[in-house]
Image (cartoon, rainbow, N blue to C red; front, side, top):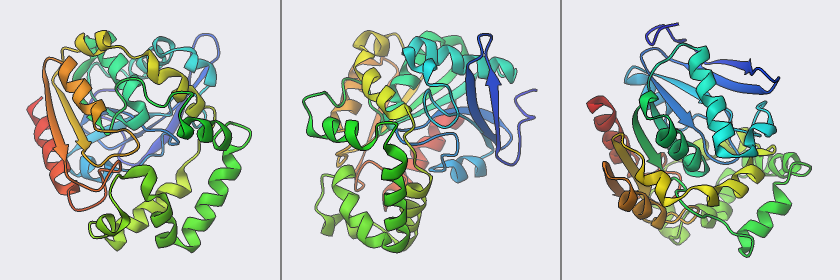
Length: 293
């Protein structure tokens, strides 16, 4: 399958490696391929930003990262094991080079992949990405996540969140804003439309943690400055100054250590840079960057 022969509609498939581990992935669109490492609580059905990339003629390959969706949690042993598995998907599809987009808790996967497989990467884009030690065991957020999103509980957590989001979408958005933004709600709501609220509701309906989020918590501290410094491909860093989920220091850390990088600090409301008034600027920067490389 060549780079211009990918699927027009989203196709969800899987690949079994030589020792029987399952890797789930999706493909949508035709054109130059983009490999997306989705954020936490997501999977190969992610949607944020996809329509805009498809309109520009790209195809998008999205593995469910280790422990998410139907991808084997054993692939989350370490980033080396996981990223080798993602590489086998590209080999399986006969795709030589990709743009890489790494989102939020998918940042370490994208960084490790670009660092260790430079011959397969055209460019790297970090969107609200974790680039260094993230939540630590002493943090209240870490302790809460270990309870709410552990594999035996997470489906009930998300069932409650999705049910409440479907019935009281604006109320749930307001309750969850502090998880994504440092701004007071009155400033956030001034930037958000009804369409954004609907996209947020849909996000809460497709979220699941599986074993993946626990794997994410264990791996964010394994990315080093050396991994960032070894990235040679052109890199775009897109991050909101108001991000409370992955503070903007992650973006500055990446820019400081990646030689061939451009930092774009957004003034939008927070972590979900696909929503809100400044999202247009984000898309403009992203598309200009991708077409250059």
